[in-house]
Image (tube, rainbow, N blue to C red; front, side):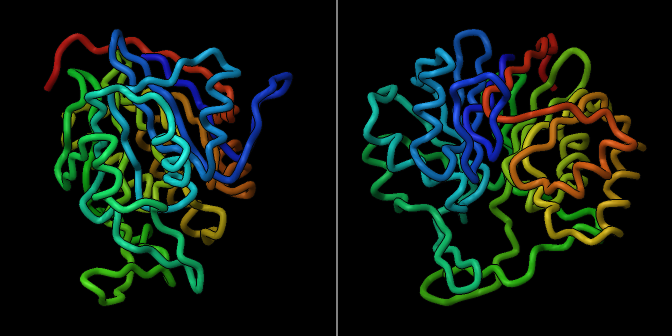
Length: 275
C-alpha cells in the first residue's frame, strides 16, 4: 500500500505543494486506487499533479461530512472520473451540518453527486480490498472521548445535536499490523483503535496517520490518549491536520511521532490473508 498525503494544513519542505485547512490522501494498492477525502477546495487535485499522481480513483471514501474534507468534491466532479467510481460514506454524511452559526457540511447533495458516481452508504464496515477496510460507524468505548459540543445537524427538517456518528476511518491490514488512516477522528482515536482491533482481530498497531481533532482538548484527555496509545504500542505515529500543536508536542515526548504533511509518502506491505 502506498499512501500519499495530497492535502493537509502543512506541506513538506522543498516541495511545490501547498497546504490548506483540510485533508486528503491518495491510496494505491496493486491496481486499486482510493481517494480519501477531498480537502477544503480543489487544491488536492493541483497538489496531486505536482506530485506526479494521475487522479483516477476506483473508490472515493469520505471520512465525515465536514467542509474541510468534502469541499473538494466540487472540483472532483469537473474532472474526468472513472466510469464506475464508487463513493463510500456513512448515511449521515450528507445531512446539513452546522458549526455554531456556520453551515459546515458537504457542498453537494447526495442526489446530485450520484450523477457522477455510485454512492454506497453504510454504517457497517466495508471491505474495499482484501486488506483495506472502511470502518463504518465507530462505537464509543471510552468515556474520555465525548462528542464535541456545539455541533448540530438537520435531519428531516429538525435540528439535532451532531454526535459525529458519520465520522469513520480506513484500516489497512499490513504484515506488521494495522495501519489506521483518519480524517479528523471526531469519534475518538482510541475508540477507532478499539473498533479496528475488534473487527480485524488484530492488536498490533503499525501506524496511525491523519487528524485527531485535539486542538481544543483538555490536558486530561490528551494524557489519557497518550496512555492508551502507549499501552497499544503504536509503532509509527503521523499526526497532522487538526491534531493541534500542543497535543502533538505532548505526543512527541512519549510516542514515535513522525512528520506528516502534504507531500508525505508512506508504504506498507500487505497482509497475506483476510479475516
